[in-house]
Structures are given as structure tokens and as C-alpha cells.
Amino acid sequence: MDIEDYFSRIGYKGLRGKPDMETLTAILQLQIRAVPFENLSIHCGEAIELNLEAIYHKIVRKNRGGWCMELNQLLFWALTTIGYEVAMLAAKVYSVPEERYCEKASHLLLLVTVEGKAYIVDSGFGIAFYQMWQPIELVSGKDQPQSPGIFRLTEDNGTWHFGKVNRKSSSTRQMLSILGKRDYRKIYSFTLEPHTIEDFCYVNKYLQTAPESVFTQNSICCLRTLEGSSTLIGWTLITVTFDYKDDTDLMTSMTVKDEDIGKILREKFNIVLERKFVPCSSKAMTFSD
Image 1 (tube, rainbow, N blue to C red):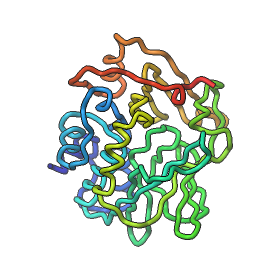
Image 2 (cartoon, rainbow, N blue to C red):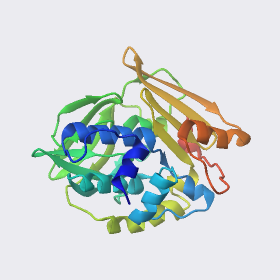
Image 3 (spheres, helix red, strand yellow):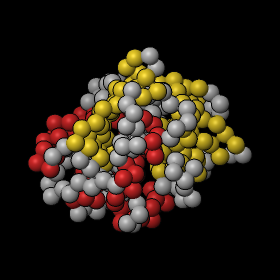
Image 4 (cartoon, rainbow, N blue to C red):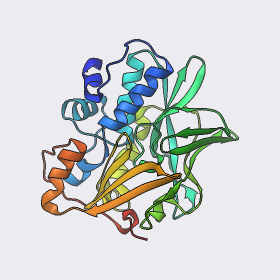
């Protein structure tokens, strides 16, 4: 594995060996704009592996994306390689329909210490509205505005809660089952207990095999752009522009024909699949009310 090849994959041309906030922010932003969050392997009959070399081969050499356990593990490797102090953390994702955090931690995120301050860094959250674009300082109760909106961390007895203040949306066909109706949306909760990638082996297998998993029920590919994001869920292509006017996000969607799926993946996400891809979507992941 070569860090220069990783930098080439994400388009990073900045300074090497300077583990400061500017470099950390640049690498995070470039990775989320170059490497999609996607679970297409599941719907191509491929297994998602947590071996770092397999992840590097898939994302760097084959120009694919991945989900949080792949994306953030690759980012962990890159950041530690150039001198950052990084730890893996495990988060419980908030379920809007059930109005609670999931019982098991299924999301991998990173804790990065820079110049004595701790930051949450996450390059692998699948819902475009709640993907951070900059590191989030580990401070309770502080509003941290970014292009997607205002993020906030709160701490309670050692458990941290991550959420975001929603903007208005210009579209009435919102994904209400995911976005939620309240102004403030809980995203996930976590503790600062360090984890290893081995701690995620069970959930990695479960999420790609269980019939009730949102990832077996839906094929997802999401890439951040300078203005917002593009997301393909099943046959629905969703484009988001953040804060396009008057504190309002613009969201549009269109249905893609089977014969155009490959073209969309190639042109919008720079992905060419080697195996037959079978799109899939459930009602919970559509943009209809």
C-alpha cells in the first residue's frame, strides 16, 4: 500500500508530514468528494471484507467506494501513516421510525487529536444530509456550522450524542422516515472507548446478509459534491444542493431506467462494476411521503 497512490486517488496535492487541522480538513473533504459511500458489492454478489489490503485494493486501485467500516478504516490508515494520533470509535445510529438509538453499535468513526484538541472525523455516513464536511471538535453543546448545516455534540455521563439542525427543504417529497420532522435530528451516539477493526466483524457480516438490514434491502451510492451530493438509491437518483437560498436545501429526484444505471454510476460516481448489478430499494428509503 502506498500513501502517494491514496493521495492521487482523492486528489490531494498538499503538504506531506504536516499533521495539522488544515491538512486533516483537506483530506477529509477530498475523500468524501472522490470516494462514494456505497454498498453495491452486496447487490453484485460480492462480499465486503474488512481486511485493510482488500479495502485499499478496492478503493484505491479499483476506484470503488465502500461503507463506513471500509471508508473510515482507509482514512484511519492514511492519517496514522502521515503522523496523526487516531483512534477508532463505535457509534449507535439513531432510528427515526423507532425514535431511539439502535441497540448495537454499527457505525465506525474516528477520534483524531490535533495540537492537543480532539475531533470527530467521519468520512462514511450514508445519508448525505448528515455527512460532516469538516472535523467536529469534541466539545459539548457547541454549534459547529458547516455547509450541510449546524452540527452539535452533547455529552451525558460519558456518552456523546451527535446531531444536526435541519434546514428547510424546497421539496415536499422528503425522505421523512430518515430525515425526521423535527428541526434537530439525532444522528448517532458513541463513547470514547477505543476499538479495533476486529470489533466490527460481526456487524459487517450481519449488515450485508440479514434480510432486515437496510443495506440488503437497498442499493446505495452517495458522493459529495462542492454544492451538496448525488445519491442513487435503487433506481432513484437524488441531487441535493445545500443552502441554495434563504436557509433552504434544494432536493430533486428522478427515476433511472435499468439500461441507464451503468451510465449513471460511471458519469456521476466514477464507478464501473465488474459483476452484474441488481438495483434494490425499499419503501423506507424512497423520497415519497
